[in-house]
Length: 434
Image (cartoon, rainbow, N blue to C red; front, side):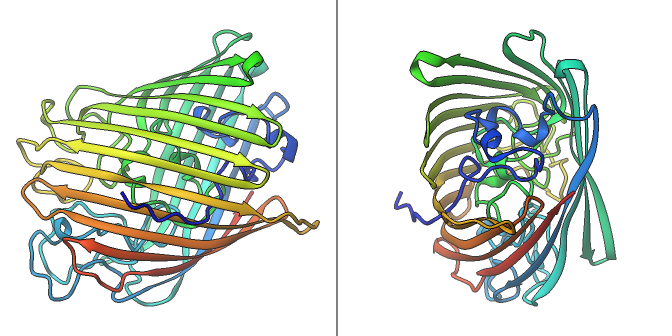
């Protein structure tokens, strides 16, 4: 693939300021957040036994055209099989400006929408409430996050409540880094899920591949970490058995199994850590029935590879993803209005490069310039192959330890199979952590 490589700033180079009590030195400790559901999710020994927190994400967005990827003269049906409806994203949740098809038939493989169309608008992207509780020595802990999502639909103003995570974590042996998670937890596939929450995401919008890798699901997870001090390295193993795979809930429901069989997902990672330099490599795989229909023989298979390097304020990251879903034999029974579970395939990846400016004041704590380049090639069985490229550029300014201001431009380009439409997005986000 001809990758478009831009500037971006990944989690390893920008400490998780959602954990306001942590110092820069603590946040820079060489622990791979991808294997711990991010530092903000695991109570520290110094933390209070009970903690209530969260964040508020306010936005402003303006999408080109009518806010969709649908060309007004395109009469192919279903229209959502002919384009990428997820391209005009406006916030960290991947919600798009609009999914209004103009009365044309869609099969329901659509993102969530904020409903602004091509009109500029202020938004409340997300209000998240988080609950943490740790037992003595943190051997047992609990974490939950729920989202309030105000949206305008054809039925008027509605606020959706979504329980994104709710899990208990057990550390059976105090002298080993072995953890067991039970409940609803983060994906273990790849690395992008690390930045799913607004405070942890450097920019505003997720990649074109986040819909396949950042979903949460219900089940059990095992995390193990082995420190190799003489080699300045760490080996990590993360394995989960869940109701559904790592697809987001708009595509695959997560809270129950529709097939009666689990999906197994895992990631094997390696880290090399020296002062000022970090290298992290990983490989992921997922296999099991697709959880948007009831046929246990209709499978989904995913493989991926990821890499990150952080060097004196410069950060480079990338991920390659390969997805195959078999055709289902019956009506889709998932979260949307899908009628047919068509076979589906994805190839592609993203690349990120970024720089953290070397200046700081008591108010302007961190400043980052970033971009992300990506290419996605996808097709439904028997339908047109769609290839697109995207370049996302922007900036982030952290004000103190609890506020971040982000501004971003998303430039989409349809390269094959879909008409090139005006679906670029200008978006901004102001995030408060409390």
